Image 1 (cartoon, helix red, strand yellow):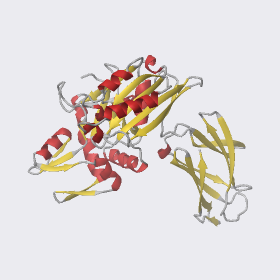
Image 2: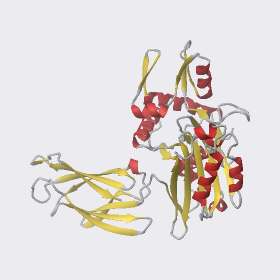
Image 3: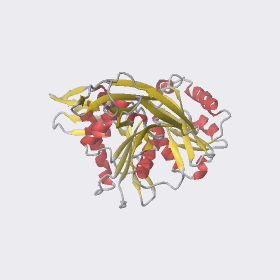
Image 4: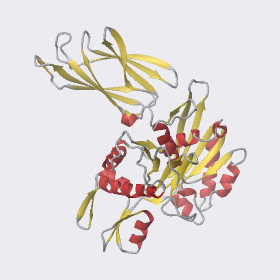
Length: 421
């Protein structure tokens, strides 16, 4: 097709179906990748593999499902769960780890891109998942590394983050007010709302999420005499009550079948409404485009529910003056935070921290007295300070005694402190 300057890929990876989008510089928008040609092809790709019994050939997607239904091979699904649990699957006397199976599925599905862009290597790939559990994220990074896509070319992002990128890549008139998204997938119904603070410079786009999993799920929709439409209408009216939401998006295979058409039609009154299944893969594609260096003209900071909103610095004395060294910065993904620095102790062993919240614009200072350190004279104790996050609001500081050369060997003593951020 067209020959872009870069090959930018957005990948929505879900337990049941996945989708791929590539950025087309010809049309200046993401292009959804399908398994075949023609308007009737289903662009969502079943997240499944199958090994044929006679030839031991690996199939994926629709072909994998069809092969298994004909009884001609072994179906392998629930790939994300297998990767997280380190489950080993035996297929025709050969054992595969969950990460190996996930890598095989990603490798095979990404070959679909060659039908559209046959020669270009991937410049940037953003893979989005609903649940950014740190264990799952790390397993995905392992699978991508097996493909040769290390963290310099691949990023794992939440659905919330992909939604932010998608929304703010649309016409500005669509997000002049708040923007809502109803996502109805296998687990149940989720609602996301983007709020943009235009009083700050730069502007900040923040996202809030509400879960309605017990209230509405696939089983309710499948019931012949069910009241799924009534339940959904009540949920929608509740979350939108007194909210200035001018644009609504609906995505997820839970909306298929037409059961919610009348409710969506009512919600159209006074709003722009869009219904589609490739929002997250396209949002990931927009994110990959920006992260590759193609910046949007809009001066906006994006904050999703995986991002830290508080910057933390530690004050040190270096090059004849005091400096504030960042341990974490607002906008960092909490499960990717892992900052390490080394310091030499002089005077009272303490950490002088500054916590700056980008939302409230407030800065607080906090001192942590370091305990359990061996008694040594000044400048004979070297410490490693490691900062990570347990959640987006909870930081962990680990201080390790490294000693100082041969005369003052390190004890390796570790002390852990928690910090609300």
